[in-house]
Each structure stands twice: as C-alpha cells, then as structure tokens.
Image (cartoon, rainbow, N blue to C red; front, side):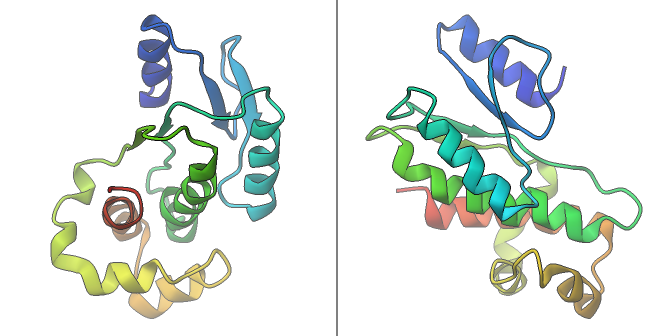
Length: 163
C-alpha cells in the first residue's frame, strides 16, 4: 500500500469522507477525480469537478503526489512533484474551510532545503514549458530533480501555506 492509499485508509477509519485526486483510478469506491499534475487543463478540470461534487468546502487537503527518479525523467519529476503540486494546492486553497489543514508529504530527500534557497527560488519560477531547459542549463538529472522537487515543495509550503 502506498502513502496515498494509507492516508485514505487512516482518514476513513477516523470517519472522514475522502475525495481522491489522482492520475490513476484508485482500487476503492471512494469518489475519484482524475488529475494529471503535468497538465494545467487537467488541474482546472479537477478543480471544477471538485466544485461540482456537492462539496462547497473541504475540511482538509493531503497532497501525497509524487514520482520517483527514473531514467531521464528530470522534467517530469519536477513538474509532478513541485510545479503541478504547488499549482493544484494554490488553486485548491479557496475551496478549503476556514482553518482547514493542508498536509504536503515530501521525503527525507527534501532535507537541507534551507541551504539551497537560491536554486529553489529559481526552480519555483519555472513552468512546465521551461523546466526542461532549466534542467539542461543547471545540469539537473533525474536523481537531482527528485531531491530538488522535495526540497522545493517543502520550501514552497513553508512560504505559501503555513500561516
């Protein structure tokens, strides 16, 4: 069981209703809204579907999306794990009830983000269209992209979400 599925199981065990946003349909009866974090149109469509789900407000958001480094997927890793994740969370915030928690799962790979703020600031200015060139210019391979993606999402969360 992955981290996302385990999170859903824990929330449901505590009596919470969940809505799952994921690129793949889960193996459960929970409400599922397709979401491809590499695609801005998919993010907008998912947000529209959430509004039409009968929920005016959500009581929390757990962001558990992520892909591992594989081959030459540096751009995809940064797009899914950081750029798309941050865009989705940022757009979802108005749908949250006052005081609702936002949990962003990273990994130990994100440790030491405080020592890398200049590169993270630069990374967070990128878009899915510019991230490939950014990786080439900065010599970022898939493994480094994964580390940067986790550092960046922690840094972004601290600045954009944490009160």
